[in-house]
Image (cartoon, rainbow, N blue to C red; front, side):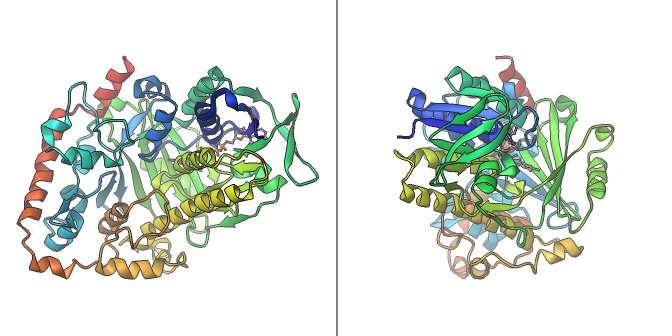
Length: 517
Ligand code: FAD
């Protein structure tokens, strides 16, 4: 029987795993987490996916309990700047286009082209980002005032069940504060927390991990080991020798430099979205938190140097960046061939990672721990559970790789070698055929990456129509149909967006109110 779990690593992955397991199994499972004081965590990872709300819900945590402690803010979308051309921007919102007369509003948009901004014509969230609004109001029902019956339910489909009618949204947070918060939560619920260095990983005669040897606490034995040691992959890759499959051929960004920039958030305002600004050799993220912005340049070392990347980032931030220490990070892009081998499961960066363009790192962790609980074995020998876990976790990362590849391939920008090469790079298997389909019919559930990877067809549509580099044609059949209802819907989106802007507080105002309790 599996009774004792040992987690090595106390970054976001380690603490999300420990707390999720405790919330799932309570005292029926003993959880020990050992983390090194000497080896620091990656120190970035601040933007999330809308499914992250399921994680906090599973832990029984309400927003006022954890958000102020982690300097968290709301995220309704990703804003892409300069991906088409310098000065252009668009949003990838967490909002599915509505359906009008059996066709997606996105199809009608391509046919009617009411403006050059798909995101603003088809989504209310784009306007809320522009206006720096909070997705939540200070008391009182909101949806019923602005949306018709049924419409609010559609909007809320992407929201975890049980949260009621709300916008689909995610969070930004300070990853270090979140790990601290979760460690308190975990320890209060019985997680044994050891601060020590793991010096060695011992295997038994069958090749299973029997114990990890720590510097001051001696050997720690367990039935199941979770490797959350980050890019080091101490247990899975190093001790068990599981190979790492690189995605570098299709996703060349392998480095980042990050800054934490204290700013006057009140006067600056807080756009409720992550911003990804295209650069000559990658892109810069900007993430608004309650007391600062998190920012960093993700780049390919084949196209620029760390010094040049840091200079670019500092110039982008401006005088506020002066004297701030920069964190240079070398990224391992790809995934372990299998994330669960013998009695060792890798979760987090040790399992796999793609550049944070769509904020998928924490989503990978959440997915992995949910799948682990679902397939939790009775004994350590259950090969079929391991196989099905590995397939699911591998598919999620492979699917995200393809979606990210599309970002560069479909970007109209091609003003230097970095952006031109993105159009000729080796494509992930199957994408060429899918691209052919999307040219004549926007992505739907039958034409995107066939297995679950977190992104729905509307995300592909938002990116293709925003990036502007892929020739897509409207459906010819729409020319034979009456477009009156679709035109009315474009107007309704505009009206609803301005009604929401009138009624919602600024994000900063809402968060200050929340923090004050
Ligand atoms: P780490 O944070 O590296 O933690 C490793 C842990 O292992 C540490 O506690 C360390 O002490 C411990 N350890 C290592 N060796 C030993 C040892 N010998 N003994 C004991 N303990 C040991 N994800 C998102 O979802 N959104 C984002 O916006 C985002 N941005 C990112 C930007 C960049 C540049 C990068 C590189 C990643 C980003 N990520 C993002 C990914 C995200 O940061 C990670 O998925 C997340 O932080 C999990 O990291 P981790 O816990 O796996 O590893």
